Image (cartoon, rainbow, N blue to C red; front, side):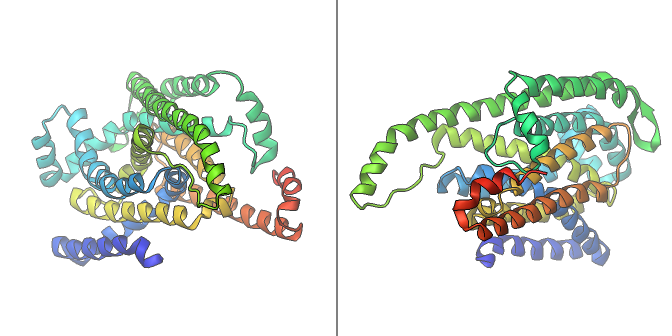
Length: 380
């Protein structure tokens, strides 16, 4: 199972490390290895959230996610994206930007640093909306009950997530954006840039998430119509299969996954410049890491890990909220990538530990019979 799921990741790792040695010797080998670990540590929460969405899709769209999706993730976000942001921020043509990335790495890194406020604002707002919509939703299973119960009641207020996100964006633009960090340790007033980029991130979330939700609702209506047919099949002794997202619903969910992955990639791409400003080594290291994130996503889906460890999704979304805050803070202040990665690891680790404790309580209570009681006492 492990080899089947992670086989391509192992192969890409070997090819990437060999390519690094040929490109820049053993020093390049070490840099690529470090970048791979950095990407995996920063994106574990990404894999958990992706798995929660991917398990709703049928086998065809899961395969699309692993083929076309990985091409977008590796080549799009880890190779093309760093070049695009330089081209846009410095008003350069694509060819000029590529030439700059390959021939003048120091200048390239300066331009990426200067573009960071707009990148952080876009990604921060997109991730913040994911977190807010999660904590304001009334869920049967609650991890931090004392916090999540009152928040789920507040979530009944229409457009609360968008209102809070806009307030956070306005405060960020007027504080962090007014003293945005630039290369050389200098600061510049980029409040307007932060505001516009943040609004773009919010709009992207609303459009993609809204379309995904719309088509998912359509699918649920179809499921209701098919429910009677499934019951008849069960009574007749025929196997019944769960309806998976397909067609337009799966397409927009796939689109949502790719935008989500892009937002998660911001901190990894920017953090990579703390290790190297060589675009080739960056693409190799982050690409290897992205492959493992994809494989881990599939592993979580196939093993049903999210069903067994029910708080993992909670921990991942809290990590998303923390990452959103970190991105907004980095508009003005530099934060070590180790701290960013450890926040996600700690939150997901805590949610996993809570899930294990919950499973032990349910087993001690006699399985499903004690489920309701265990759920009520699960929050802290």
